[in-house]
Length: 273
Image 1 (spheres, rainbow, N blue to C red):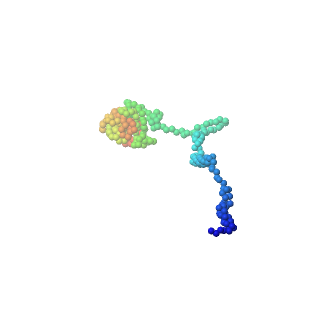
Image 2: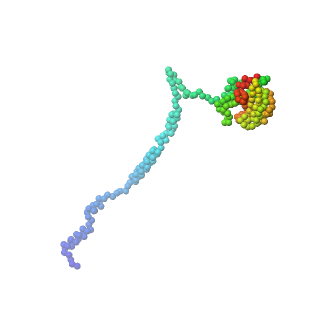
Image 3: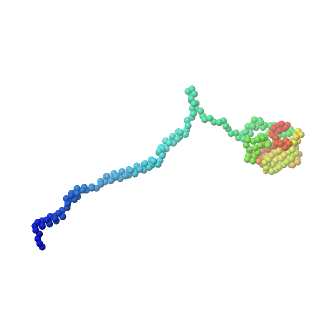
């Protein structure tokens, strides 16, 4: 091996030393880089508490926007509603005096049909007396209540009843005996369940005029006369019943003059003796 001159050997050593030495700026950079210390435990807890508070705040905001404002003040709302529903009475002050006025009401009342009948009967408009010795008498030996008179009705007694009443309704009670109003001849005995029910017609001649008396709604099996039979005043025709178009036991009496129905009450009042 040939030996290098001293100058060459020195240059070679300088190059090797330069290769092994770390550049000064890099060493300085490594020495100046700060070491990040570990995060303290308190700071981590504080961060968690802040997150939890944020979630609770969001929940409270959701509840407050979804419920009405008075949901938590129910008692106060009810009290206000109660106070508002009770209006104060009207007052009128006259010369220092306070007068409390009640609401005005119409003077209106409902009177039942039965009461109207009783009032009408009590007033004497349908009252009568019977002479047991007369040649023309009422259909009962003594006066009995009259429930309905002759003529137009404001309201029919039933759905199948006529609004114009062609007779007079006596209500002595079921089974009461019915008598002929005058001498005559039986011209019809009908035991059916039609409008008049079981009924009898008797022909009379009174003051030279043909008069027919009709006895309707009689009790089944109670007829005491036969077709063509001559009868005398007060002879029993049958008994009070509720057959046919009837709402209760009563005698429906009709008086026909030459085939035309007339008011039995007015006719008997004028002719019974």
